[in-house]
Amino acid sequence: PDRDLLIGRLPKCELHIHIEGSLEPEMVFALAQRNNIRLPWDSVEALRRAYAFGSLQDFLDVYYVGMSVLVTEQDFYDLAFAYLRRAHADNVVHVEMFFDPQGHTSRGIAFDTVVNGLSRACAEAREALGIRASLIMCFLRHLDEDDAQRTLDAALAHRDRIVGVGLDSSEHGNPPEKFARVFGRARDAGFQLFAHAGEEGPPAYVWQALDVLGVARIDHGVRAMEDDALVARLARDRVPLTVCPLSNVRLRVVPDLAHHPLRHMLQKDLAVTVNSDDPAYFGGYVNDNFSAVARALDLSPAEIVALARTSFSAAMMSEEERTRAL
Ligand code: ADE
Ligand code: ZN
Image (cartoon, rainbow, N blue to C red; front, side):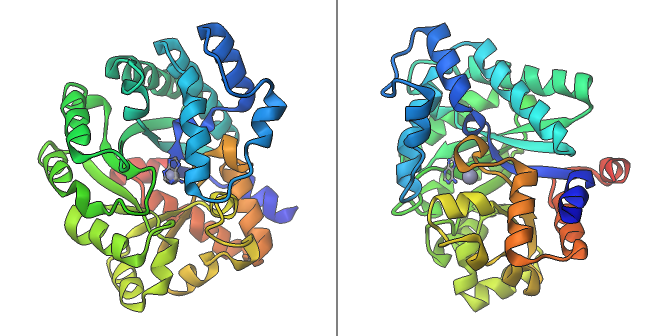
C-alpha cells in the first residue's frame, strides 16, 4: 500500500510499450464493428479466454489478429490517445512507443495512415495532458530483411516523426544478425536503434544486438543473466534493459514473479527499467508492473525510486529535457 503510493507518485518514462498491445478487448470489438471486420471470437469474454499463452508465439498469434481491427487513421489515433491518457494516469511523463507497421501494411493499410494517426495522438496528448511521446518503428523479425528494407524506405518520408527503429516478433530462429544491413541503413539515416533480445532467445542474440546491430538499448534482455561475460559488458556500458515483468510471467519466460531475475539484475548493476510491453494482453500498465514486481521481490523504496530514475537516464531525452522532467 505505501509502496503503491510511492509508485503512483513517482514520475517515470515508459520505454517498452507496443501500441498495438494496448488494444483492450472492448476496443477490439468496438473497432471490429466500426470497420465491419469479422473476428474469430464471438465476445469480449471469449477473447479474454484466448489470453492463456504458453509462449511468445501463442501471444503473437492472437496479437496479430487483434490488430486487424485497426483500419483508419482515426483508429490509430484513438488507440494511441487512449493509451497516453492511461499512461498519464500512472504518472508517466515520457513515452517511447513501439509500433509494428508491417502488421498493418501486410493487410493493405497505408504506412501513412498508421503514422499519421499515431503521431497526431502524440502531438495532441502533449497539448492536452503534457505527456511527451515519440514513435519507434519495429521490424517484424519473422519476415525477411527485404520486407524490413521496404518498410525502412517508407519510413524515410516520415523521418521527422519516427525517432528510432526496433526489432520484435518471434525471436527463436530470427537472430539480430539477419537484420544487419537494414539496421546499418537506419543508422545512416539518423534513427536510434533498439532490439528485443534475450526474451525467449539466447544470450548470443543479445551479443549480436549490441555488436552487430549496435543498439542503444536492449528490450527485455532477461536471459542475458545466463552469461556472466555478457552481464559484465551490459554493466560496464550501462546498456539500458527495458524489462517487462508481467509479460515475462504471461509468456512463461519466468515461472512466476518471485523467480523474476530483476533483483539479480539490479545487484549486478544493470541499467534496468520497468515497462508494460503489451498491457492489454498481460494484465497491467506500468504501475501494475512496478507494484507486482516490487511486492513479489520485496523491493525497497530506494530500489523502486532507482528503477524510475533509470527510466529517465535510459530515455532518448536531452539533458535539458531530463532536468525539466525530474
Ligand atoms: N511484439 C509485441 N510484444 C512483443 C514481445 N514481448 N516480444 C516480441 N515481440 C512482440
Ligand atoms: Zn516487447
